[in-house]
Image 1 (cartoon, one colour):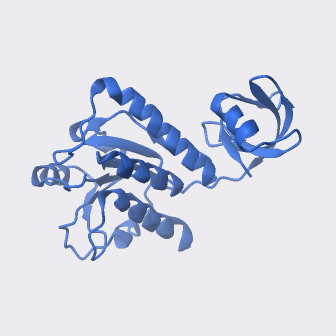
Image 2: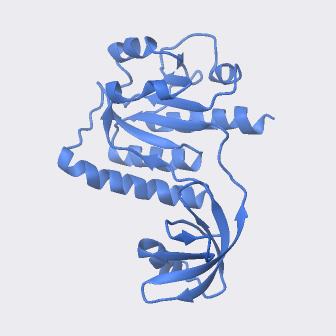
Length: 244
């Protein structure tokens, strides 16, 4: 059943209005008709089974019915992703959104070969959020995965997290990602992933001085930058959801 994130849900009148790109997708792409059922979600994690009741010139009116159960992970996971080439970054956005990421923080790092001009950053962020919105709808998420403004490593609020996982290909410690996650029930996790050239020695040294930081290798194989978040999110999902 098709799902849409919208900001026009009125629970008092039990109506929801789809407009703009959502209306175009509903009517012209999916070719929905009156009385068809869809799911509408607000931006607070609430989703409702709804029925299309009316088509207007530029919008669709839906009757909101029962709230449906959440599909979100029990732990909030943000990804600080080093900037990488466009197609790779967009792949990472899509897959991380599908797998449950709460937020993507595009991060300029020492080895990032991609440079984003300030005048173009707003357009990129708009496009990136459109990609995550579509991925969250397709994967039946209850919340959108937000892509933030581009930042640098020093500007990230590391103190907001009770666990910071730094993906580092040279980490040889015996403690695995799974064993770290099983030590306690974490609420907010930040995953730091380097660009194509990896994290620099200086960046690693700076990160290890912060609280709640663990360097982790991702198995015996070296993963591409755009693949690492999928690996980590899959392990977190297994530990917190599938292994109960």
